[in-house]
Image 1: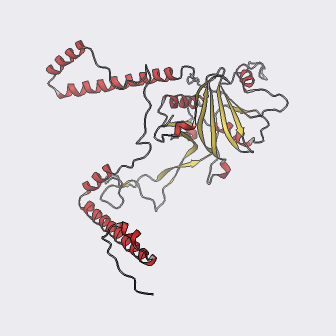
Image 2: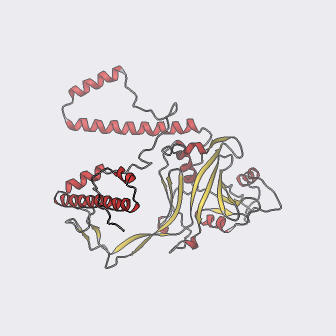
Image 3: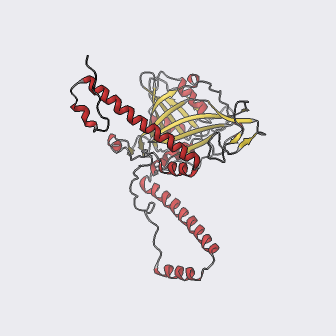
Length: 393
């Protein structure tokens, strides 16, 4: 075998396609890759030395180094009539004249700052009011019972269902909920079950009338795997249909805890559009407004790219280990360990962590109906995800 001829790495990368010999091409590509990686490595080390001498360079680089995610490139829908204005309404001519006179007479910067704060507060209140009007304009029939202080939830399954354990686990997730298996003798529809639940005729053992249910949850299965949830706001709707994926029972979660009967805190994150506000108000109406802080339990519904991630945790307090750094270590130097920042507070001997209780699953809104098995108000379609930068929730 002859000696491999060396080629110059400074030539264009297109030279690779002009080298007929396979061994020569491989050697050329290896040399090009080595030179490029060596240059990048030298650049990294030189940048690190410069930033260690001048920390302002690191701050400036991090400000510019912002990843272009789908959330940052999100495309928002146009506003409807009566919704949030695209710009602040212009004042009248008299208001402009009066404002001009006031600006001429104001010489103190403190008064201008106070006026700016009042204007910002007014704009915020105007935006919140317009957002409510927009939600009503887009979904006039989707008024969930967010004012309910003590919700009562009925949980059942689809017809001929074989899974009961996930439905029973939902009773531990939603306070004041009851699971009733759907019998095979009486083929009641969801509309009939909703009528029975919202207007119970039987009395309690003590003779008092039963309180009506406020929500109905129907658990659907496919091949003995839970795959959907239907939530009905009683007595007359609306109805929300969610697909359910990645269901993980508590026993399959490593290091899971056992839940207690305390009312959990509720965290609703990243519901931004009018449809998202309606969806968040649905879940808000299913939990009591006054959580029991003593239980240290929290339920989180995090919306990201129209997928709602459902988690339940408990706050756990424990002693600080000897190998752990104290609270507040390195905060003064931007969180960089080993810097000249704060050494932390050694007097705080405890740590706060999270223990997952489960279950965990992922929801995706598929359809919203005006009432119970009535007209469709909103429905997910595949073409909605053609533009990946546009989200519905």
